[in-house]
Length: 468
Image 1: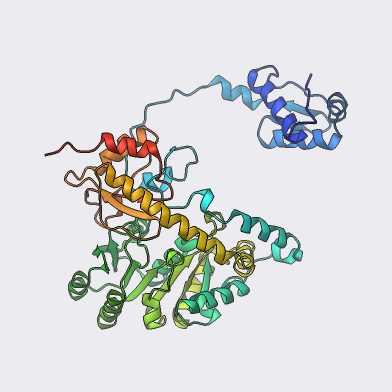
Image 2: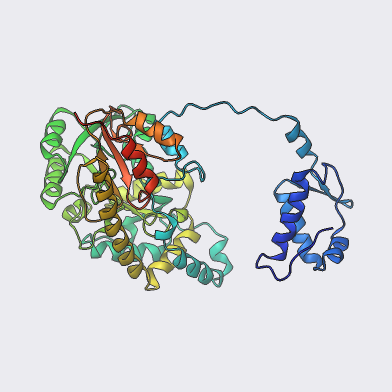
């Protein structure tokens, strides 16, 4: 007999699903067993037939029940097959490489401390704004949620981004803004539009690790440009540009991933001059610009998108679940990139883009960004002090942003350190993953919004090298 508690905060449907699930998993209800009819169970439990019907449908969706036409509901016979063969778990040797970082960090239960991941925790995201926007969207005409969007992306959002860019001193028309499935698709479209196998691309070294597998897969030669406290090394960039013929230079301007440095105005100007002299385009990945309290000059603001493709997204400020990014560029490039977007994915999600537009225009977004900056600034100080206290050195101490680049120095075996940390449920991001040549380095990337965890600092303290 199944008993439900009407006074419980758990919905009756959920209580019924849990009760039946428990009986099936405990073996009280064997595979193939028939369940009471919807009407009979409703009478037994004192609930409506709709409650029972919804519970049964959820159990079918979970694979625990089968619905047989004109016969009723039965415990799934497939459960018997699953129980008959129980594979033995083999010990897995953790290999800390770029594939590991791309895959494991997105697995919900892979780690208890995700100190090396690249995103904000739920507590920092704008969940309330998303819920309000979804409620408003539900009241909109059905056509909005049932059609392909505009090839360039939702026009009202493109106009809002035009205003956002103007505040950063980047002038453009809405037709120069192309909406994408996050900044990742913007980068991918740029690669596929402007690069061919055998071409050369410059990247920050260290730089954005997810970029490298895509470039390698295209047969593009990658050359790293040393990253300094002021941004890309101008002497290194100049020497490499004279020696090679790059088509693109991918660089992260504000609160760089992974070092936390920002490009100084003088460095941005010099990068643009070198690009003009040697005729290559600059892909400015500026997804952390919202964390800058004052308008900092970007490379795009200096050349007004003549040879700069400016990329950003809302994953780091609203939510990565929406997958809304954008790029802004000159009109000719916009048309080429649009054709590639249409070939790859037709259009982007107008539903997600409408949600972001609603958030940007409802008036609470600026307050959310201000609070987010305050949180990150405080976390930068806390985590930096803690890392120093357990013996790590800092490459740079930024005032804001997500990342710190820190290391013990000496032994560059950060991959081994990451393996030992993973065994304790701690995810670290060893520095070689961010190198264009994947060469060992003593540095690691820390996400300050995820790294304020006593377990992390205790582990690092045990790994502190003995005094020489």
